[in-house]
Length: 383
Image 1 (cartoon, helix red, strand yellow):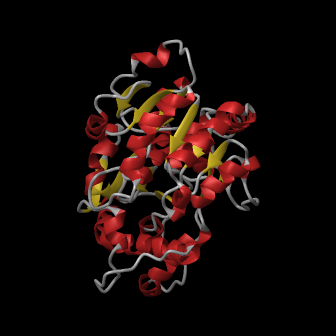
Image 2 (image 1 turned 90 degrees about the vertical axis):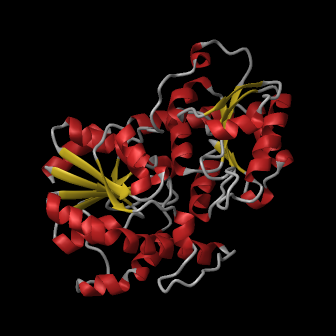
């Protein structure tokens, strides 16, 4: 088969699709990954072929303007904020649709693979009359986001004589069943296999015996960046925590871009290392993780059985942080309450209560029993 993988415009939408894409390729199928131009290095760095669907862009820019080119206002309440995000995903399709359709018409795929909110995939599939597969890349995918995205695309769907996308051939979900707030009928479970980017060399300290608990501090690629897309307070909180966390008795590793790591020099006492480390490579050598609530980070930590302090920044990840907290595998610190003292208190709570480690390891064991990407390939071939 020929499988066209259609992804979004940031690493968080691309990297979770790599394991299933490679499983398909290893089974002898042709795979082509299509995403915004800035995702080219991420895709080719994973050893997969790439084709652009639009020029380089990012979601904050897409979210900032409506279809008519008017500046949007970011809502503050959760429900309208989720709808705002969903409409942004709908508008992302308008940037990608023409090139994605032209590519699909030339390459003639048998199947489209996409993630839940990358709605270019089902639009291309519906236009060409080919099946599509949806892979969830999150613990929780608020339906309100997707329905708002579909609503934003009402004119484009109407051109096809539709009011919604056709059902996927397969809907893949990676949330451990015991964590679900409610069952998800019609979904097929898949084991989450972490892929966090190309790793040239695993740091030597990963293999060394640690003399005290090790904590990984990461706020992802966007939260602390000193530019127009910075989440207010992200950089200052990261810097303050790198100073204060060692005082709790942790050896600290700060996983950030190499450029950002330079702003932490000289490293505070008790900080072992700072730099760009793919999380899946260093998680086996960590005991606690403090992070921004990103989906890939959350699921990578879960798969390794490491308890987490989640400081969820964007509304899209709030439900996932709540599930993590409810499962006893981590502590949620809502972003509006996030400060040095509240994060330190959450870390101390995990340090002093072994139930968090037990619950995290239980969930990792549960995830390990789920069908692998290779198992899912066999289901796809039989569908």
